[in-house]
Length: 547
Image 1: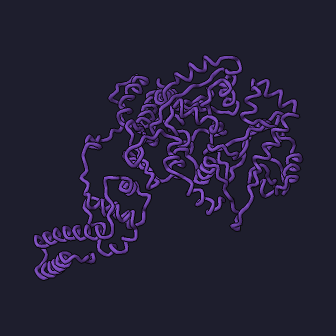
Image 2: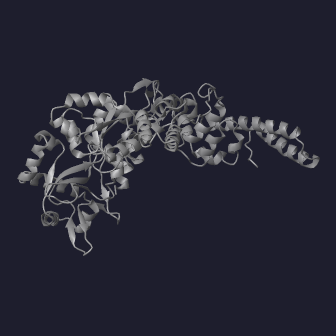
Image 3: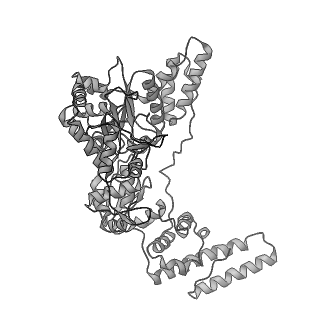
């Protein structure tokens, strides 16, 4: 674990303008800075960065937080990965603790065994020959740090001679313990591919056999660092290109990624022996790129592409599919000098929705009326996952593919809210000023806590409730805090404002009681209580809130 004191020391070095400006083009806007929000489809700059508050907030989608939150959301990293990323950006050395809370040295087991694998490659003629035969150049070997894992005893000897315990090696995923209790190296007689997180840290390995092992490819087991459902091979190299090109090529293998990068397609990544899943979405959608699925044209590849296309299109991610047939994959095409053909393919993929409809319908025998009905039902069910406008647009394609009347394709429609974004919500500036003052001067809360209740605020009761519940990450509170048009009162002014607010509130309550259908006794008692509060407020005294 990263030491908490180390994290706190790092936080003192962070500057929100510097951090956000590392990723976005900021423009000065009064006391704050503004930029296009990277967390939604934003054309007009709606994200505001406040150097005085050290927070950011998007006035359109509500995203916001501090420097750490921005990097977490933008890079799609875990909290520890974000801390390590920021430490790297600021050239700050982090301390780590063991389970007993003591500071421990970073043992860098994965990095060191990767160096061991790389050195071994130089002495393994068969591995070098295989790499050359696949068309991988020396620059790519260096860039992707290809290596070679020798026999199990050699691996175990390296670890022990470098002071690593078996428990450390098991935790890192490079050693396993068999049913007989014996230790064994997980990567044996294989070309190794170090797998890095989005921030560039080694989290595991992939291995390709060259000696006839039954499993052609293996990956590290799941560890604290390695979870293949959240990782994409080559993403640490591809991310800058993905941002620049606004597109990402998703392939099925290590060699595809290496060869595509070698041919200049530096936005290529690969899943790690698993289909694209919803866990990949936060990483793959970073930067809002067009997603191009480059899969094999066999049954497994088609099924994986279909599931991914349906998933991605249902959440509004743009992109398409390219299927490689005749036993050739992207790596083969690069090796055979067909990079120009690949470029044309990547520029013209079959759109997700068209691909999904085509493949759904192909699963059924349309000459059989019952099968045709099933195709209609499955196609319609898929269209219902899409936004109503898009679903209605593609209903014609589904009906045309099935050769039926379009009226038979029923897609779910959503009632449109034409007033959304147009209706101006009245904002009570007095309520907002009180809330902002309590946010910036929390010591006033104890003084005012007995006098107010969230139900007393007509417009911003939810914001006050969030404040009283200490929900300081609430986007509505962030919006208030970062808005320079909302004033902050000192102690004298806030007390005066509260008296004015309470006077208006109880005057309104008095009218309601007088016009109510309460029985005479309760009405008289309630009126006297409210009148007593109003009298005290006129004298400049705060009064307690009573239900």
